Structure formats: C-alpha cells, structure tokens
Length: 77
Image 1: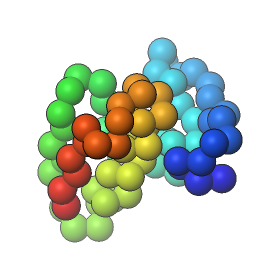
Image 2: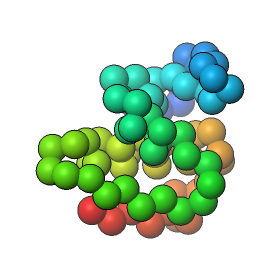
Image 3: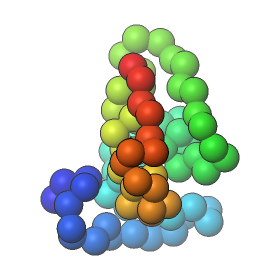
Image 4: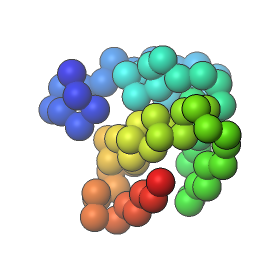
C-alpha cells in the first residue's frame, strides 16, 4: 500500500491521536512531528535522525486525514 493510494489506512487510537500506516515504524519524536496539528512545523535535528522520513509521512497525513490539497503544502529539505 502506498501512502497516497486509495486503500484506507488501518487506524487505531493511542492517547487520543489517530495513528496507522502513516506513523508505522517512526520513533516517538518523529511520530509527534507527523501528528502535529498546530499549523506549520519546523523540524530541526541532527544528521541521520529521520527528518526526511518525517516529511512524506506528515504530508500524507495532511492530505489523507486533514483533507488538505497537495497544492496547499510547501515542503523544503
């Protein structure tokens, strides 16, 4: 399954936050960044910490769960 495919995510709840395929395999800090709902997010971390892994997962969540248009998202690495 792809993050942007038509198949529904297998979602569950944990601590009130919706999770699923989008957060699978992420560490707690990465998961927090992906699930952040407070507006724009700046991720600053050291080399090899998973910043680039967070980006597509966060975008997938914004599109899939928050129903944002891909044309409303700016992602810079």
